[in-house]
Every structure is written in C-alpha cells, then in structure tokens.
Image 1 (tube, rainbow, N blue to C red):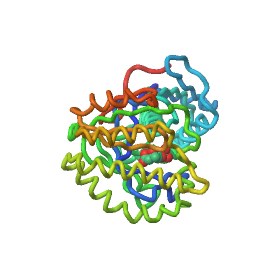
Image 2 (image 1 turned 90 degrees about the vertical axis):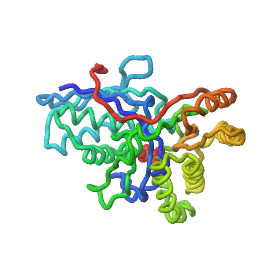
Image 3 (image 1 turned 120 degrees about the vertical axis):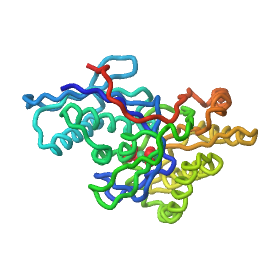
Image 4 (image 1 turned 45 degrees about the horizontal axis):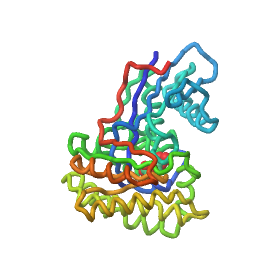
Length: 333
Ligand code: PMV
C-alpha cells in the first residue's frame, strides 16, 4: 500500500531545549507550539510485505528529481522505519520519498515536519491508523522531539511526560481558535553549523539552564492563558523572552553555539521599531539564524513590507497557524 502525508512544521512559543533522554527525546520541560500551514514536508511511503531488501530512501530537491539524501539523514530515516516496523511486529521493506517546501536544516524545524510526515505515511502504508497520542509518541521517538507536536494542528502542548511511553503532545486549541500569522525572515538558509541534537546535548552545560527551568512553570502558565484568551499583548513579550533565552543557553553552552547572524539582530531590531510605531509584531526563533515574526492578520502586510526592505533579509515565507497533517493523493513516486 502507498500512502502520502503532508505534515507542517511548527514554531515553538515555549522551547524544547535540553533532553533528559536524548535518544528517546524525553524533554526536561514542557513546550508549546503553533502548527504552521505552508512550511510542509510531503512524504510518500510504500510497504512491500514480500521484499526483504533494505529500505529505500529518496529525497526530492526543490524543483528537481528524486535523489539520495545525505547519509546522516538517510540513517535517521531508516532507523525510524525499523522502529515503526518493529512496533507493529511487521516484516517487509519500505520505499520512501520525502520533500520539503522550504529550506532544510536551517532552523525552520524541517525535522519536525519530516518525521511527523514519515511516521504518518509509514504507519498508513502498513494499514495502521493510530490515535493522535500514539502517533505523537511514535513521531517523538524519531529523535526529533518537536515532531511530536507536528502531528497535531493549531496550538499544541507537549508536556515533559513521566517516561518514554507517556511523552506525547496534546491539543491546546484548534487553528480556528486564533488566526495568528508567522512572517519568517530568512537571513541565512544554509544548513546550520550545529544540529539541534547537539544543542540539546550541550544545553545542560550552560550556567543558565537550571535557572531557566525555575522560570519556565510561570511562563508556561501565562502562555497557556494568553492563547486561551487570544491575548497577543500578553503572549508577545513572552515569545521574545523565550527565544532570546533559548539562544542565551545555546551561546553559554560549552562549547558555545552561535546560531545568530548579523541579519538576525537586524530583524530583531526591526520588529522593535515596528512595535514602536504601533504595529503588533513579536519575534521568536528556532535553533537557527532566521526570525519568525508572529502577528495578527491586520499587521501582516506592514511586517512583510518592513522586513522585505532590509538588505540582510534573503526572502520571506508568509505562514500562518494551520490544521495539521493530512493524507493526500499526490504521491512522490
Ligand atoms: O525537535 P528537535 O530535536 O529538532 O529540537 C527542536 C528545538 C527547537 O526547535 C529549538 C525548539 C522547539 O521546541 O521546537
């Protein structure tokens, strides 16, 4: 059976940074995110019961044909396919192809959408339909923890969980609850110098990591309340605090990780200038140099115009909250 899933990436409002168990992606702290619409991974999986060969993994480059992925990426995909097969006591081989609608490994959470899509397509190809908690837990075990949130739409919380089996994401509110936009300013779309996996590993070496854990419970509470009340004036300052804190921990890890580029700072300043002019816009970031500007629909045009004018900005992706993954009929092979 051949199944194709389109899974969006997500932007964290409260970040997962630091793992209790890195292999299984068990986080130190809960995280909260918004699932996007346009930044998606499409994944086609076919399962052949009588095929004993190795799993075949292909990627489609933007505008190009199918080719071999980078060895590390292929290894992670194969490992996850074996996990999925093992979880359901199945044999056979998978044929898989995947593509992203946006730059990969540039701090735009391509592994979140990629592994959410892979989990959905591969289980679908086995003829298995999982409930969201099991799907989320399985996506998390890919090692890309944020994939646990990308199997759900709208606003999502991934509690820290109590153990491997019980760590999965839950819906906080559907996309229809609050129409927020995300204007992503690309200042460098080359793959990032240090993977988020390595960042999680180093996080606890930062002298600020422990303090961050103390601060988070109250910030999490306020973010939940602000989402429930659709209150961007309350949510916004926490988005920026949280993004800067993620990078503060990264920059003070041993050895330090510097994801920022000169353009990152320029965009952060521009967002402050927009607010000074009365435009509602708040920045957040993943583990990369690009800046996600969260705003209501009536600010989006002004935000996009202001960011487009900056020479450091290579391009914009105008995204928004979305409904989560879907199965589609357009296969990649
Ligand atoms: O899911 P991972 O292992 O790629 O880590 C994600 C880390 C951040 O994107 C920086 C934060 C998050 O919660 O998405």
